[in-house]
Image 1 (cartoon, rainbow, N blue to C red):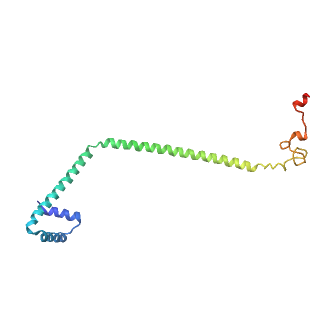
Image 2 (image 1 turned 180 degrees about the vertical axis):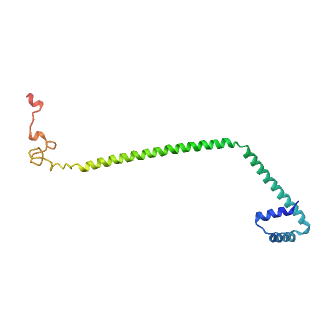
Image 3 (image 1 turned 180 degrees about the horizontal axis):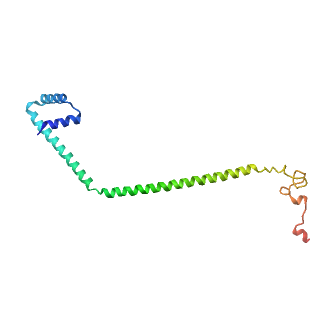
Length: 162
């Protein structure tokens, strides 16, 4: 097995420089001893190779799956969804514009009614009456407020028959 490419990739992956790697090797040699060091190196190489193969297999399988997916169908569905969304957005814009116009029209009508009511003279019941008309201004009771039977007695149906 080629040790240099594996070490260079490990160094890049963990951001370990050459001298740090040498220090780790010396510490391992001191801890494990010269008898067990080759065995540990073989096991480490085995696990690194196995991990690489697994990652490469996963990568290849994912690539096959992605290549097998019908991208045409997906892109067409996305395009149709985008067109539908733009149509809905255009309709919403039109509805919003129409609604704003209706609100403006109703607001103008309300303001017009309010302005005409303010321009009309207020009927207080006293100031607009002419002398001689029924009401309180000339001292006679108002027709709407007074009891007619008290001031003008009328004959009821039972009185007419008797």
